[in-house]
Image (cartoon, rainbow, N blue to C red):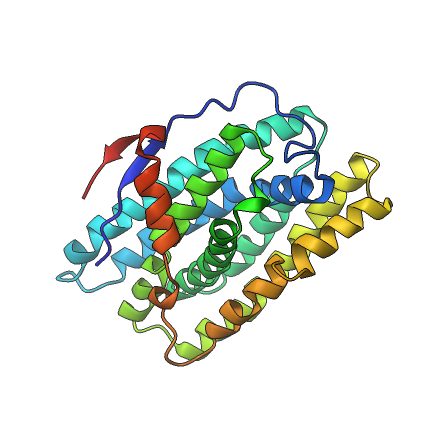
Length: 274
């Protein structure tokens, strides 16, 4: 089992946020802002799906799992709270969250599956996508190097905790004897929706700022997504790994996450410790 610490990040999200806060890099700022739009509703779904999954375990296994899921829930709840404050800043700048309503519509359709394991599989797939993004951030400090300290702190703390609990949903799905074919099917579907929705939200932000059709914007996109150390190029092999029969999230190295958490303990207050 994975013992998870619940932390309260010592960060103030109330001061106004610069429109292109990441060193003036237009595409990258819009990309991060768009990603944040999905977190409050998405992380609430993750919390609910694992709580429901816990109830489907045999009674003698539930106490074994309860502590890890409690830690997962606590971490995701703190992420949700801070990104909700972040998104309020974005709304005050005129950005419309068009992603969250699409997520809610899909979650309604997911209710057609009476087997609770489908929700856990969706959570496991999404958690792997966020783990890829988290690892990319930690491996490439230049991405957030020009960002204000509070934004760098927010994203790297979030990334480190995503890697810390990267296997919780996956392990629960296995404990529930989840079907491997469905595990892979959900990853394909989740990946498609996630990528399309993230790009649509990013494009909305760029259009809102009058930056959508500027050459510099798309040079930034090419560099940060497809360049030598770009997210998609770097993360492709990690995404494909999910479809291997022997895959497990623990194969994803969390050394940089543990290092970051160890070096920045003055940046949070511990709420609950294993």
